[in-house]
Amino acid sequence: MVTIRRAVAGKHQGQPGQQLYILNWQKKAFLSEQMLNERTAALNQLYRAIVTSPEPLPDTLFALNIQDRPMAQSWSYARPADPNATKAGDFLMPHFAFWAWPLKYIGSMDRALTAITEIEANWTFHAKIAQAVWRGTPWFNDVQNHDLRKRLIQVTTGKSWADVQALKWETNGQTAGNGLAIEDFCRYKYIIYTEGVTYSGRLPFHQACRSIILTPPMAWMLHTTHLVRPVFSSTLLQTEPRQGPPHQSDRIKRAWPTDLDAGDANLVMVSPDWSDLEATIAWLENHPTIAQGIADRQRELFYDGGYLSPAAETCYWRALIRGWSKVVESEGGEWTEHKGVRWELFSLGGF
Image (cartoon, rainbow, N blue to C red):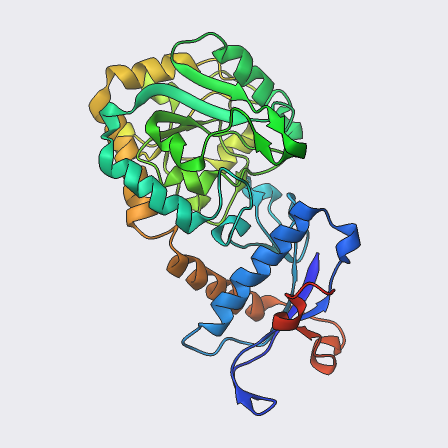
């Protein structure tokens, strides 16, 4: 976790402008390469939003958390979807991939969006591969559904409608022999989304596709997840949802209280044990106009609507700074008496 100070617009050392200062930080020796990359990416995102702001931003002090799970009174990548589990101090920040994700098959959001747009320009929805695609690590699950990925592989093994594979990691986890470039998921009609220990950073990339995301009810919210408009598989199949956790638990009902008609949805939520996944895909294949509508609404909202663009991301960071500054309470005068290390210097990596 990193504590940051952002200075107001105005004169600082004789120069006008707004600056980012680091007050406290975890030493590099105690961070994995991945965590160091995530911290650097997040601070670069924030710095870009500050120095390009057309209007002054308020002075503020905050803690930046790059762990999967949110921490009290800090900025985090995810928060619980269940409003009863969300704390007042949980503030969402954009995922680090909006700057860069140094995996061979991802890169950065803007690179991926360009590649996805090229695919979408050349593939109609009905021309896409009529399978549900997934790649991932089977053991990487939330404690509330610890068999999620293992069960997915069991349900889809040997099925003609599925291209589901556990990643075969190579070179110390840097690449996977059966991995897919993130844009290549958009070549499929159906993309399976699974959360990990908490969220999965792949979600915004998949939302740029004119494809249908199939997922159990999401337990974690990223900064754009509130835009999801789900239809439940039980609505499509006209079946009664099974009673009791985890299928219709109180937690799920609180997180996703509204079940839309398929004509308004941009995502499909299936049973958390994947028991109706095959039937749901068969239903969508038998109702191609409805299926295309769900896929179209997703791409039109998230990509055409600009929610994944650098402009929207920087705008969100600025709104986050303004909103946080109105409610934060700091103890002592450390952040005004000690200016910390300017980000330009800190970013060179000597700290």
